[in-house]
Length: 253
Ligand SMILES: [Zn+2]
Image 1 (cartoon, rainbow, N blue to C red):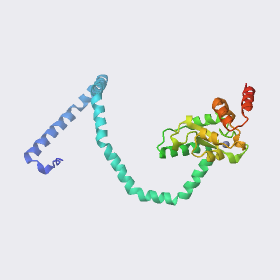
Image 2 (cartoon, helix red, strand yellow):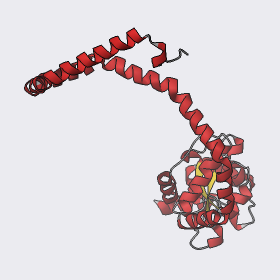
Image 3 (cartoon, rainbow, N blue to C red):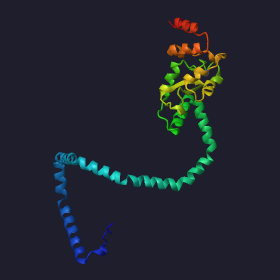
Image 4 (tube, rainbow, N blue to C red):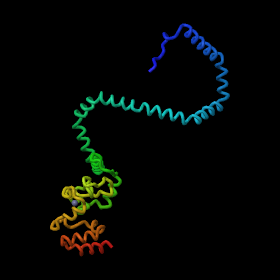
């Protein structure tokens, strides 16, 4: 980098010359100050247009200059932030340590007052951690719950009737098995079913449901959507569902 010149770097002659130039300029300005003001006032519009024209003509270069400046200095800013973070890391950690319980309590209360939103946040964060594709919104999830009439997609239980079977977000194809976190892959499932299903896909879970148990009564919804598949399953497990499917069908019509 070139060192900036100080007064000591100039010869006395150069300094004297510069002083004269400045004085001359100042005098000229003082003498013509009023004239200039009058001129500006009279040519206000014209001057404004000139400025606008200048901006139009040089817009591209000006923007490019700004952009270039940003590009050149962007790492400095992050460097500055980085330095700030480094310097305040301990303070920050200490603050978190000291307010750990408050934060936990705050989070708990938030989850309690925002049950569905907190489920979504949890799922989206988990998916992000696992590098799984997809996010979904509260709106999409609410719509999904309505679609299922707030019932478990597997055992058809309504949560209001049995609070211990509260509804959770289930990935029909689990994230660990290549499922996405998009709404298409999500169904409401009661806590028990979700636990039992574990890393099974919906299909595997249906196939594995114990026919003797209440859960063996497959979801009406699933039946109507996957009629052929369901009939095959029923035959496989020798459950007398065929009549029930048909009677359900006729009931709905
Ligand atoms: Zn269930």
